Picture (cartoon, rainbow, N blue to C red):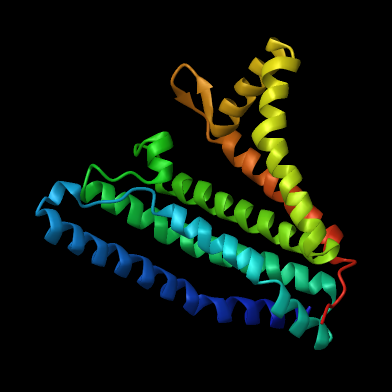
Length: 243
């Protein structure tokens, strides 16, 4: 357990400063673009943005992808087991997601209070009459899902190789863009497709009658992130160090 605590602290402390570097870059870029737009147009109404959480999702996705190879190589060479490396990665994802969800919740609600035209992803979906905790929890689980998905993806790529990964990616892309829509529209019974759509709407949290049940999206995000995490664990158990 001491070694596990050591690797978790290492992962979290080394990533902590990069969170603030990321936010500094994002807000600096937004400020510069806003100034340029204002100077060019002289119209304040054209200055603005929405859904800043998308930037955070990109960041945590990069964390899931690029946080694997070098960390795995360094930790495995220093005698850490694959189980500890996996738990350390999950701890890093949870640590980063929790902090960024808190920052994005505060910033999103603050910006909306100051400028009513700004909408966060959560606020755009569900409105702003809900508790800050629900907002944070939803974002935290969404970020965890992105981390776990891309961590699983990089583990698969590492396992099967780049060439096979390209073919797999093309196959998945064609499946989601072409095959699944065609199957849903022309092959599957209408009652089944309507049931799938109804399930998707409930999974987002819309229970009908203009009511929102946050238990559904929370359980859905937990389930999907858990499936991705389990898949990552099953793969990393047999992952070899590639020079």
